Image 1 (cartoon, rainbow, N blue to C red):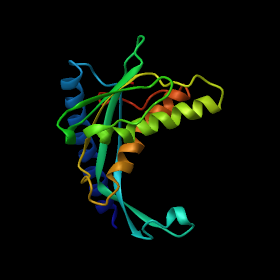
Image 2: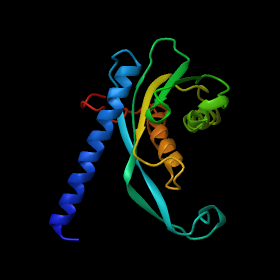
Image 3: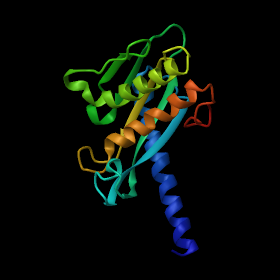
Image 4: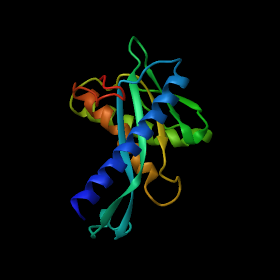
Length: 185
C-alpha cells in the first residue's frame, strides 16, 4: 500500500473511532444524568482467515481485524458504591446493575449480554484475591456502542470483553485510566 493509501486508511479509522466514542459518550451522558466519562477505548471485531476454533486446540490461527469496532466509555462511580452499571446501545439502552464486591455472579434473564462484562469483572476479582489483594473492583458506570454485527461470527463478544478488561486492568494495578473522550482522564 502506498504512503497515501496508508494515510487515508489511518484517517478513516480515526474518524470512525471518533464517531464511535462520540456515540458512546452521548449514551453515557443520557443514561447517567449528564455525567461525563473519564475513560474511552475501542476494540475491533475480527475474523479468522484460517483456523477457526483451532487456537485453543494447539492449532494455527490467522485472525484479521475488521474496520468495525466496539466502543466503551466509562467512569468510576466513587463513594461507597458497590454496584457497577452498564448500558449498551444495541440493547435499547437497558441499564444493567451488578455487584463488583465479593462473589460476582452471572446475570440471568434477558440481560445476558452484560455477562461478558460481569465475567471480566469476576476474572479481575479472582486475580486480585490470588495476589492477596482486596477481592473487589471499584464500582463504575460504562456505556458500550458497536458497529460490529452481533451474532455475525466476527467476535462481537470478544470485542466487548476486551473493552471491558482494559479499564479494569488499569484500575486493579493503580494505573491511570485510558484517556477520556474529551482528553480528560
